[in-house]
Length: 283
Length: 296
Image (cartoon, rainbow over all chains, first blue to last red):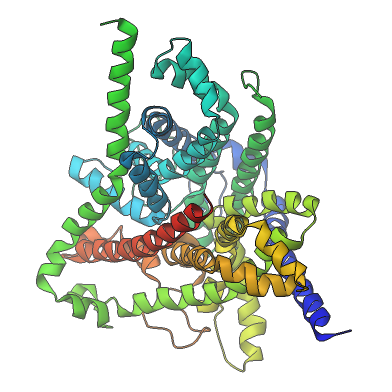
């Protein structure tokens, strides 16, 4: 065999090995979370809030954090939709091709996407101080919505960009205004992609810790108002793991398991949805 | 004017306003952080803040050097681990892999991107930290608690896999198929084609992909906070603990309000972090835009 052939095979083997290493790291992470988390799971974890002495190993669960995280991620996702959907529709329906504003906004979202979540957290906290707001569900929602805004907008923009221009022209030629075209043609046509974008953003929002660490605070109670501090799953995991008690650390593993399951469900649902919500989509 | 047209015009204006406002968020964040970090900038020279190793908030000494070095070490290790693995994987997926492998691998890599950083942190504490403490450090004849630059680097490397692979795959896709065929038809092997043609042509894009991964690693907070050890001293080896900038901010932001200048110092740390990340991101994005334009 000549040298070129050897080199070819050597590198091919290296490539397959790297791919396997990367896939294996995913398997290893999921396996660790399941193996450590599942035995520590019990019903109380998902049905009770922390009782007295919970962080010393006494009874209770993390219902406060599960509900807090769901509230927070839902609020942030709704807020982000309210901003990103109009923006993305503007970029694709109203803005002229090659418009400066459009390319600037896209670029700015690309850059925002790279801003670390701790920066959103710290910035959110400064804004809250400015308005005299304490660490609360609302504060967390604002910080997380800033964090997921670029993620959601970019994902929506990518699908809406793919819609053939002829479809828009057909709508205009029937006398529809740009707004009507945007809402009744573009949104429907892109619905599967929009839903995926929303779910990706929701998943990112529910899993992020650094942006909520100062803005949402932490509480052993389920928040009943926007101005109450809210516990979140990632922080619950972080705090429980930080205690010196093995019983509480076990609960951190169980909490990590719960969070991972939520993320997996979101990821599976978004895959299934893409295939399903095609009622109004013209192929 | 007709009601429909009025609605359309109003909606258009409103959307334009939202678009402009959201395009300006980056600037608002940067200006906000700058204003809040001005008090400390007014008292201490920037060079002292950046290059002094003395971190004693109570004595009003804020030297960021150990934290900056912590970030640099951890990010460096992550990049060294991630780049070869990601590039080889991206080349395999784009040039060699059969279709079904590609279709099965991509969602799994997306899944890796979706795992929350705190879960990476838990995994690091459970697997990587003991591995370093019990096997890797003794193998080099030294002692380490396991909470180290290496632990942070490994966890970060896995976290940036999806970004680097995803962007490189896009970049490889922009390399026209014809030039691969031209190379193959001259008798080059596939690997030679990749080495001399595809990679060379894709080089700016590959660098952009790596820079994007690097800046993500630089700003990542939670996982690093959990595994890097958080000792405020510049590391001198990969087995030393590190205290990267984001971990510093996350760990101390709660108590800062009681100490004068402390919050300004931490927001300066945030501002520095933002500037570094913006710098990397803007460069990488500009390169990627050019790469994309070249094929249109």
